[in-house]
Image (cartoon, rainbow, N blue to C red):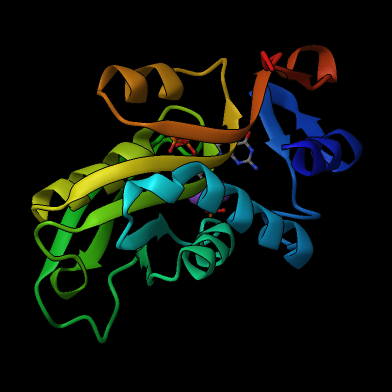
Length: 193
Ligand code: G4P
Ligand code: NA
Ligand code: NA
C-alpha cells in the first residue's frame, strides 16, 4: 500500500532493537485519512471472506479496526488488556506474552459478542512475534467461530510472526512489510507485482 509505505518512509523512526516508531500517524497521533484508506484496503483484500465481525486489541488496533469494520459494514470488537469493572458477564480469556515488554497479559472478550459460526477478521497495527494475533485467534476459536483472515498494518517480516501464522494455516494480509530495520534504515520487502 503506497500511501502507507510513503508515510513509514517519511515519518517512521528506527529505534534500537528492531523497533519502528510511528507515533505521528499510528501509535499516538493518528491520521484519520490514512486510517480510512487502510479500512478500504482491508475491505478490498477480504471482500470475498463473508466477514461477520472484526476483532482487534486495544489500543492501537482500534483505529484501523474500526475503519475496516465500517467499510465491511460489520461491528468491531476490541479485546481488553485490563479486566473491565463493568464486565460482569462470562468472558473468553487468553494469555499473550509480549516480547517487547517481557510480560504476560491476559486479554479478554465478553462471550456475548462472538457467536458460534461467525467469520471473524482479526486486525492489528503491528505483527512481530505473532503473540497478539494468536491470542485473538484462540479467542475466536474458543467461541466456535472461525478466523476468516488476519490483517496487519505493519509487518516486521524479520520476526517470526508471519511464518508462524502462515504455518498455522491463517490467511494473512499485511499492508506494509518490513524486511529489516538494520543500521537505522527501513528496508521494505520487495513485492512482486
Ligand atoms: P507480537 O504481538 O507480534 O508478539 O508483538 P510484541 O509482543 O513484540 O509487541 C508488543 C507490543 O508492541 C504491541 O503493542 C505491538 O503492536 C507493539 N510492537 C511490536 N513491534 C513494534 C514496533 O516495531 N513498533 C511499534 N511501534 N510497536 C511495535 P501493544 O503493547 O499492544 O500496544 P498498543 O496497541 O497499546 O499500542
Ligand atoms: Na501497538
Ligand atoms: Na497492537
